[in-house]
Amino acid sequence: MLTGAALILLGGAVFCWPRVTSVATERPGWLRPRERRPRGKGVSELLRSAATLDLLSACLAGGLPVPVALEAVVPTASPQTAAALRSVASHLAVGVGPAEAWAPVRDRPGLTELSVAAVRTARAGTALAAHAKDLARRLRESLSAEAEERSERAGVLLAAPIGLCFLPAFLCLGVLPVVLGLAGRLDFL
Image (tube, rainbow, N blue to C red; front, side, top):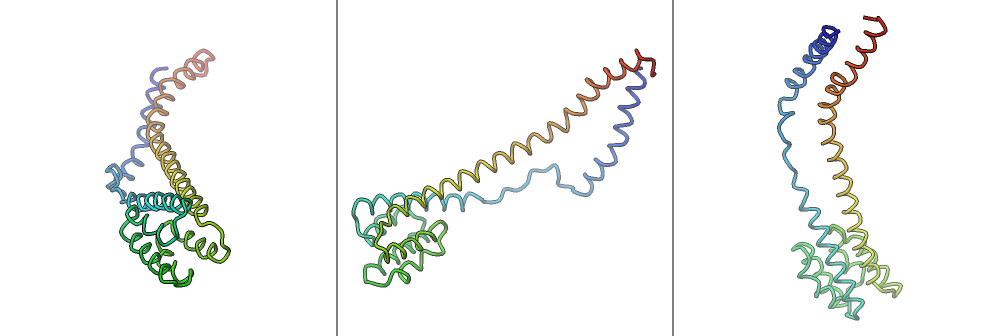
C-alpha cells in the first residue's frame, strides 16, 4: 500500500516537472516582482479635482459669483488645472460667452462634465453648485470602485499560489491515504 502511494507521488512529480521547467525557461522573469506603473499620479489628480469641485460648490452655494469662486479654488487645484481655471475666470470676468470661456477646462481630468454643466446652467439659469457637488461625488465613487476592484483582483492573485501549493499536499496527505486504505480493505490492491 505504501509503495503505491509513493509511486503516485513520484509519477506526479515526474509528469509535472517538465511543465515547470518549460515555464521557467520561456518566461525567465516570472518569479521576479513586476515593476510598478505610476498609477498614483492620475488618481491623485482626480482626487484633487474632486476636492476642487467640492470647494467650488461651497463657494457657489455661499453666493460668490462664478469668476470669483473659480479664483478662490485655484490654490487647491493641480498646476495645469489651476491655469485652466484662472483662464476660465478671466474669460468670464471680461464677458466672454460660456462655451468659449469654459473651453480650457474641457481637457482636464474630471472637469469635462463641469464645463458642459457650466454652459448648460449659464443658458438655463440653474445653480452650478449642485452640478459641481454631484460631479465630485461621482469622481470619488468611481475612484473607490476602482480601488475596490484592484484589491479584489490582488486577493485572487494572492490566493492562487496558496491553492497551487496546498491542493497537491491535501490530495497526497489527506485524500490519497483514505482512498488507498479503502482500496486495501476492499481487496482492490
